[in-house]
Image 1 (cartoon, helix red, strand yellow):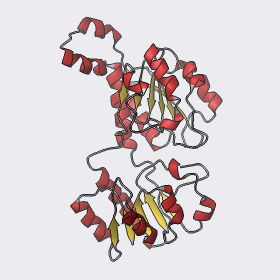
Image 2: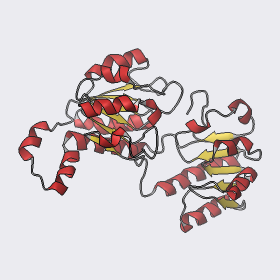
Image 3: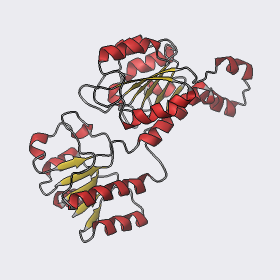
Image 4: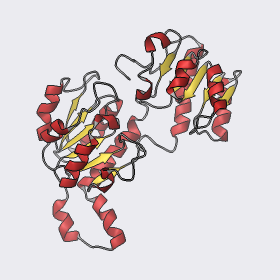
Length: 315
């Protein structure tokens, strides 16, 4: 049996049934975890979507799980030495590179060209042409540091270079990174106009950007996070945004989601909160099905699957 709990419409459900035939498909709740879904999950050989970590530990019949995301931090604490003997896990690493990179570019341009402020001025019918024009920036010759050079970082580099940006990438694992040591990253932060983090949640990346590294960044720099909220000390970030020490931020991820109403990031100036929508696109679910279909073909033919998770690295 195949278990899936993605938010498919009827046409997509029919497509999943056709792909899985002759096996049965169980469609679970996309948001809740009722007992009926748990019972079906524990009987399934294949799962496509997500589940509470305890379900994964209990699912003795499960042989392959295709996560519908890149991040898998909530499962990292499980006993993978034992689970790996019977269970293959794959994720969507690289799948969201294009939409996320475009969101980053849109956010940076909005801050550089004053779009965030102009949107706020419209309801007030406030005309501030003479005040705003001298504050606007262009990306030409901007120094950008990409903290993470996987598929997303590489795509973002491609989008930024035609604007005349000077791009430097840090990554300990990905090919093509300019820097591989934290000491090298720290050395380039003081000259960065824009810093963009796009790393997964691992023990090594948690808290990577706290007071020490924010202090290294030049006054007025822009900070972008499309990795995981755990990478950032958000109390320090909010303090530096509120004080004007940092020039702005584009944040797709936060440590708590939804972001609590009382969180200071809601009040920070020049801060664009994209609410974990950067991965989205109108054809997202259809593309996920296409990715899953190829891996399902490989699974049935006994071939190696795409995007098998390396639990040693944490992604």
